[in-house]
Image (cartoon, rainbow, N blue to C red; front, top):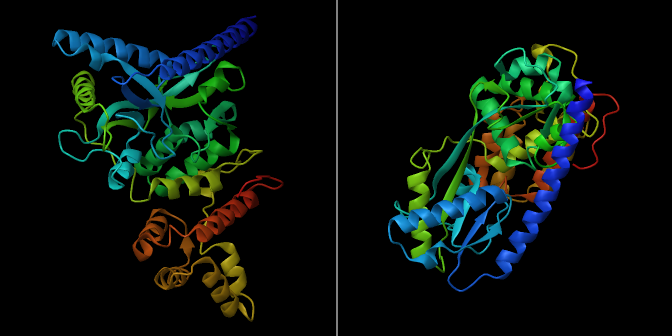
Length: 390
């Protein structure tokens, strides 16, 4: 009976949240359609309820300081951290590493007083269904991976979800590459892979547990955080109001002066490619061995080793390399790296990122081939596993 009631509550919660999301979207669209010449444009990925609270707090903050009322009128537009930011005065939310990238490209202000900063820092924890009875208040990621609870866990693709990439990067950083990758491998091999927020799968009853920033059910060890940024754009239309809004955020947000923790030496986009290709399968199958038995992708990739084994292998490898990497300096680094047999780890990925001043990483044919090699390796670890995209 308890399980039936819990499932009913979860379904009701899901449909209410769905209806609220639709209503919020309509209100959000209508509000932006009425944008006036004095409205401050804020691009964000934060939900409607949080935007409403922030706008009310900002109005109150301005009133306390006798600020101009026109500065309190906000128009909210969407922000997708995977793409170039839209035309706006302020960027709010999204992973801190993306703000580093936007700063390097000159898309946000660079002055010390108006440069980007950490606006929110949330620790990852477990979000669990009501019918789950937690055995302990805390659990470590390796414990979760081997406990069997991973089979009721919802996770998102790191290449499609910034919090999931932050979680995976933190796992690799805090546990070390070998144990961190083995932990992620086991978690993803038995989890339900979803698009978007994994908590929705829990609310709908498709999974019992999700790992999310601010997860209220149980504390996760080691401590891993999602840090989000805020910034003034390079050329805001409403500079006075934008500076006031940034001052408000800095004053009201306890994490405003905290320095961001680097994601690591591997660029986020390359790390997302690697993790998505090696961890995410369309039909996951739980890994039955222990942590020490978890494999790691070889370097050089298997196809290069197979070509080298042929009589005309050297010529074939040279032709393949020339096709993948036209740049001579980048090709020379890649060819030399194939003489260092081992596994793909942080040092290999960092080397790829730095080779020929980043030109190897920017070569689209090489990136596509590399994802295909990692995907083929991933499929080979579970018989009959399928994955349609490279």
